[in-house]
Length: 200
Image 1 (cartoon, one colour):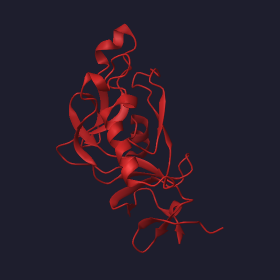
Image 2 (tube, rainbow, N blue to C red):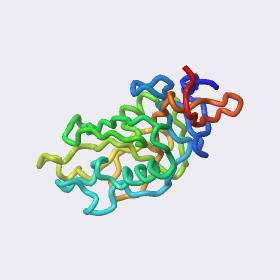
Image 3 (cartoon, rainbow, N blue to C red):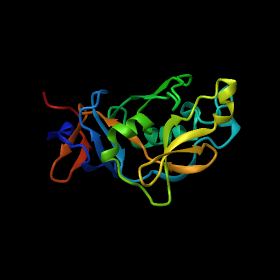
């Protein structure tokens, strides 16, 4: 058995029948940060209706977004409890507003800051799609920002950051932090599998 922290940034591997890309084998959460090599969903609205907005009517709050709901469903259906470490997603807006706070999830999408940090290892996805990030343009809690509370930062197929309305459809690319205490690597297949107990 090989510890999954031996994965290299940019290395592709299989886990739970999905292809992933290692972004950081020694992430500060204590595990291996990885992102899917292909979008899980190619067309999903970030926040499709008022009922998904937060209590102040903001559509671009990842905390209450449809995208987060899709990823929560995936986490519940696909992953066992010990396979992943929960990751704190910083919902600071592009303009620096921190009104949305943070959320902590097992499966999530990257923020703009995380995208910038790991850009060289992240694939360029489908040519006709952009991918959502968890970063709002602004939080919309102030009257001056209210008209922008529907705008989310996205990444296009060339790796450039853009603004896009949360009511539009975009691709969702899950990320996660794999737990090295409950997973190991079959080196010859670059395949991550669960173990009942890690040897001491």
